Picture 1 (tube, protein in one colour):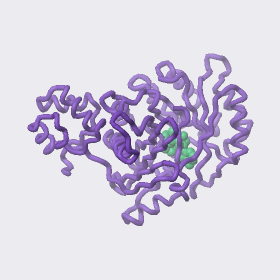
Picture 2 (picture 1 turned 30 degrees about the vertical axis):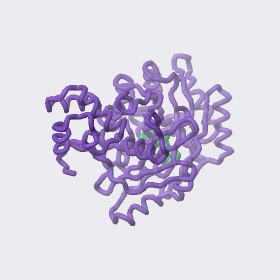
Picture 3 (picture 1 turned 135 degrees about the vertical axis):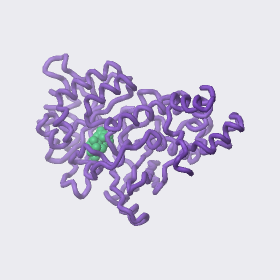
Picture 4 (picture 1 turned 30 degrees about the horizontal axis):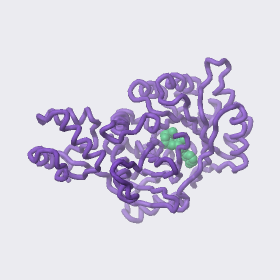
Length: 378
Ligand code: SAH
Ligand code: SF4
């Protein structure tokens, strides 16, 4: 495929309509094209039988539906599927599908690497390589949905992916310009038709962008908290030095004015001896309940057992400690879930995946965070 062709996965519907208009085509043609791409999973233009032959041949010389280059696919006995995509320059990103009884959640990456550099995160330890484009974000969903439909033998009206969580590699709110059109494709009735409640952006707390998301595309919001006070959070999530907890919680309260759900999901990675004491659990309660009621943040907590990796020097809290920590929150009336890890058999040891990729391609492929997370609030 020629690199100078326009990748139609880069466009939300308005973008595609503008592209079509420049070629003298009406908006409804863009709608047809968009539906072929996202609802039917078309890979080329020949199959788009209700488009004029002349338009199809024009498109086939100027445009393409550019899939990501698949490096590896691993399927777990529990139905979890993990894809590793090559995004060039020795970088790879990961997409994970987690099936549950009543939903199928896709965990999508937004960047190759990440600039935030959280202490407990292997993506953070790699540093930042580059932002993914809208097309590269959308291509993860496009690939997963259409491949899974075939694999699971789904009928015409059925969907494999019912929920999307932006919890793969990268900080989505530091790739805002590419993120928002990608969200629009997910939400569009002519695209994937997901409701705002079923699309979750997870952020380490980029306060100004939380406000912009509220205005531009208020989907469900998860905030990675990890500590109840600035001194500790500064150490774990370096972005806290720029946007401290007070500012972050104010942004959360503002977000709720437009959010599709009436709570924020706080994620909290459980690190033994670092942030898992019961005293800190009580501090968390005080933090989100607020000194006065106007400072209260309606929320749920999702406790994530730390997924260790060699360079971290950190350990996962014991199951008993996680339960005791959860109980402090629950006793204060806060809905708290402990995230199960899934796909353990394809996860295996940390770093294994990156090692495999290096063997295959002989390039310096960056490590992909091996933990598999599931959203339990959807
Ligand atoms: N950058 C965004 C989204 C990607 S990370 C964010 O930080 O929210 C998605 C979630 O995985 C975050 O809550 C993050 O804190 C958590 N996480 C990162 N590394 C982890 C690890 N080693 N073990 C468990 N959870 C981890
Ligand atoms: Fe980036 Fe999120 Fe990892 Fe922090 S936890 S380094 S923000 S991907």
